[in-house]
Amino acid sequence: MATSTAPGTSGCRQLLEELIGLGDPNRAQELSDLLLDRFGSFPEALNAAEADRVNAIGGRDVEGLFASVRTAIHIVLRGRLPQRAVLASEPAVLEYLRGAMAFAPNEQFRVLYLNSGNELLRDELAGSGSVSSVHVYPREVLKRCLELGATAIIVAHNHPSGRLVPSRNDRTMTRNLVEAAKAIGVAVHDHILIAREGSLSFRRQGLL
Image 1: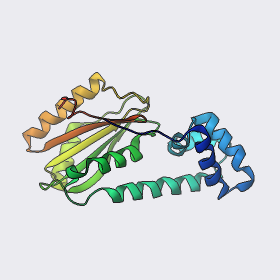
Image 2 (image 1 turned 120 degrees about the vertical axis):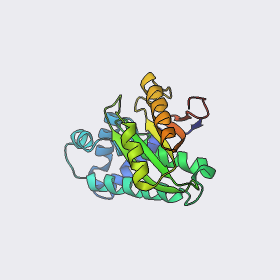
Image 3 (image 1 turned 135 degrees about the horizontal axis):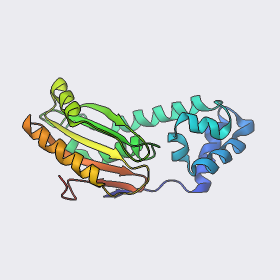
Image 4 (image 1 turned 90 degrees about the vertical axis):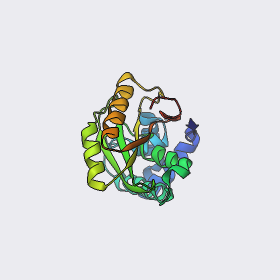
């Protein structure tokens, strides 16, 4: 399991004020307070649904700034993923997945498609659901494997609740995916559960 901590309240307020100050310096303190009251932290405010953030501050004045920061973070973390032997750089993979999913307001299911050398072919969001569930169809994931020529995958999903405990549905879906993948010669290297407090590897927990 890998763990990390978000900035404290004072650190989050400073980050929000500095970011909002780039676009609306006169209201930076006011808007940062509104966002902290609504979402509790900078990461959660940054990754909140656009409509919820707009409602919290009463307008779209700073949406462009938030979108730009999210895009920049994604590009930086995505750039740290190794171009070769993804499995040899587990910390970079976990850092990328946490950056992409840990503070998302709804459950998401992501797939890293790998070739026979475990090199990354494609990173795709295969499903986006509610705050407590996401539906993924193994046949769609495996169909994509065939389209890309992938021989292995790493899958991940997040728990917005913050709990690093696989649900019964998580375990069942994983077993179904592993069995279906075996039938077409695709290896499921891991299923990683992502939450604000860290991550959990199904492989390390003996759940694959």
